[in-house]
Image 1 (cartoon, rainbow, N blue to C red):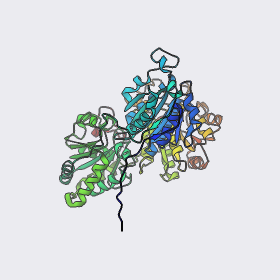
Image 2 (image 1 turned 135 degrees about the horizontal axis):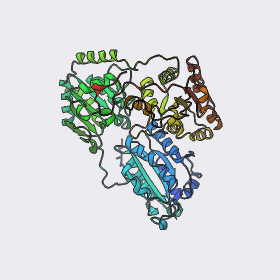
Image 3 (image 1 turned 135 degrees about the vertical axis):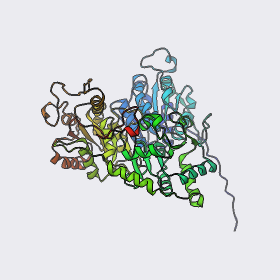
Image 4 (image 1 turned 45 degrees about the horizontal axis):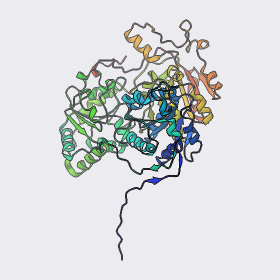
Amino acid sequence: MKTESVVNFPPQDEQGPAMKGADVLVACLEREGVDVVFAYPGGASMELHQALTRAKNIRTILPRHEQGGGFMAHGYARSTGKAGVCMATSGPGATNLVTCIADAYMDSIPLIAITGQVFQEFIGKSAFQETDFFGMTLPIVKHSFLVLEAEELPMIVKKAFEIATTGRPGPVVIDIPKDVQQKIWEPVFPAEVEIPGMIPVPHASDEELLQVLKKLETSKQPALYIGGGIISSESTPELREFAELTGAPVASTLMGLGAFPADHHQSLYWFGMHGTVAGNWAVCDSDVLVTLGARFDDRITGTVSKFAPDAHIIHFDIDKSEFNKNKFAHQTIYTDVKYALTRMIELIKAGQFKKPDLSEWFATIDQWKKDHPYPFHYKPSEHILQQDAIKTLFEVTKGEAIIATGVGQHQMWAPQYYHISEPRTFISSLGLGTMGFGYPAALGAAVAHPDKVVVDIDGDGSFLMNVQEMATAKIEKINAKILLLNNQHLGMVVQWEDRFYDGVRGHTILGDPNNIGGPDNLEAIYPDYVTVAQGFGIPAKRVHKKEDLKAAIEEMINTPGPFLLDVIVPYTEHVLPFIPQKKSAKEILTD
């Protein structure tokens, strides 16, 4: 039998026909597998939009504000792991994307922000709708491109997607002058690109990993501290297997929620400012703390000197800049976390690890869980409480929905009472903490997952900041629900006013300060969100009685298309547990 050798030829560049630069961009996006772009047109990006009308494989969704479009791209990216793509015109259109880009930078989200720019001859001359978008975004991106040579556009787009999705994900800006969009030439689409200065994905050595296993083997009170790096590296299966093989309890950041099942015996669920008592205390009292894809941010550590003070800290990260930035680590391991977990599993199975007896440690942890159960207890009320609404949503959806949130108290209550057990099902602005994030992010997630239930759990203050995107939901027929917890106040700021400022209201009442609306004063509720939603053509309902809550949530879930449920709740509730700023886990407030 004749055997033929197989030669693996490198991918070949592709020569395209003559076309406008705007069409070249669309062709590049299609080659990157982009299937949806969230884009708002303007004078400097009209050519791009004209080209999008000719796209064969890309759906263009028109938001009603550029920030709404940017956060839709977030929802798409966070729920899929693919790069989300948003587009705006120059000047104010571009600057309206700055918050979205900063949000992606803080939470390590792959985002491609494409902006039109004025003709090159006008750059730097204060032309109409001109800003130095390249310069102003430099501190909040992985990279910014200003396309000055049209022929470089295909290479730049290829590089942008490579940079955004490789290693630690993040946002990339592509700013395209109008003359580049209009130029006609025969593009060359590169199959591969070289990016100077871009470091290959690092892999830990066996020696480093064996040291970690040895520390865990001799530990009496270990803990695994996991973050968003587990989600972004698609390492959920490996993390779960590694945790069970080592037997260590697992505490997650909010960015890491879903990587480890909430109901697993080893789960400490999430910890930090409003996390579980058991999670905070277990990490604080650990003797070996293995940190995987997390960055020791202040909402987790509290007072840094009191964070895990007696632990031998081991920090795995793909970004060297995170090492010892916030908390000193005794061992830093620069690596792709998926590789590290996979290799440690192999070493364990090869007999390089003896599972320690952690029965005493878990007896302590289990007692903490018993003494401070999670979800945290709250006092019953005659009114619907925020916790009641979220808990009922969990029951009605059986915990299988994708949850997006705005920013505020509801953002903390959401994962407390809607247990997150699968990755990419909790979508929230966590590093930047951007109000107005929840609803457009839910729309983006629903576009990516049209067959799943997607719910934005929001507060009235946060929701109102991008309320205009109900028009997008209506016209585009996007099936994202809004569970609006309406307390007529900026709830989280009110909680801090109550705790630290003697209850003085520093402009935190959203309705009429002289006639505050609420469960006991329905007539004074402002604005009337049911009427607002109906004005956008979206079905809506208000509920304020406990006995009507479950049926109302069922109606919301079962109604085709978008739906707003306005749940009237009191403003007096506080999110507990609560670790005040600059306090430690041992100073956690439980009442």
